Image (tube, rainbow, N blue to C red; front, side, top):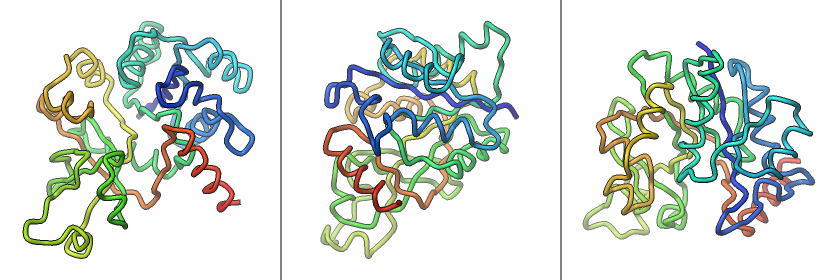
Amino acid sequence: MKILAVIPARYASTRFPGKPLALLGGKPIIDYAYTVAANTPGIDAAVVATDDERIFKHVEATFGEGSVRMTSDRHRSGTDRCGEVVEALAKQGRIYDVVINLQGDEPFVTAKQLQLLASCFDNPQTAIATLKTRIHSTEELLSPNNVKVVCASNGNALYFSRQAIPFRRDVEVGRWLAEGEYFKHVGIYAFRPEILSKVCAMPQSGLETSEKLEQLRWLEAGYTIAVRETEAANIGIDTPEDLEAAERELRSKN
């Protein structure tokens, strides 16, 4: 099984312009995700997908020719950016069985997580896969910045929401975690290439627009999303405050 990791990286972030090149522990954030992806056993190739010349020049200078590709600046999501890269590579005869979409603002992603995600495709029925991690605090549970996921008994996603799900009737919110398990979505995806092409061509759906979660479009369209649990709680960097938290986490690891 040939696996490609694509790392979307956009410079013009509304909440944190220039984020991929912001320094974390003295290195640009983008370097972390690329380094892990490129060195994970089982991943055959890794490439950064960007629409910005500054990111392109940095990645190519740091990791060499072929480590980055320029993409359109009109994409609405990192998934669409991945789709463009996969299509371009296919035209060059570079065909992959699985495509991992690893956001460039996930500096603490691990090789173990990427391998866990890839293992979902040992099942020939798997079309899309992603990860989840256990929620341990009420603050984390109630934050709309943390996307929650509930799954069926077979491990496939039933729904994703910015709300705390499932709702527990007649139970005080402060006791919800004591009454049952809650999971946060870890926003790393993997696709079979033909499925990636199809989801990129779909118009936005009602649920997607409501919650601002693209994976709801895929569920509405009838695709199953396999979900596996990881113990690691990654820190995604969306704001300068998130970068400060990541710096603290990095210091605690060293």
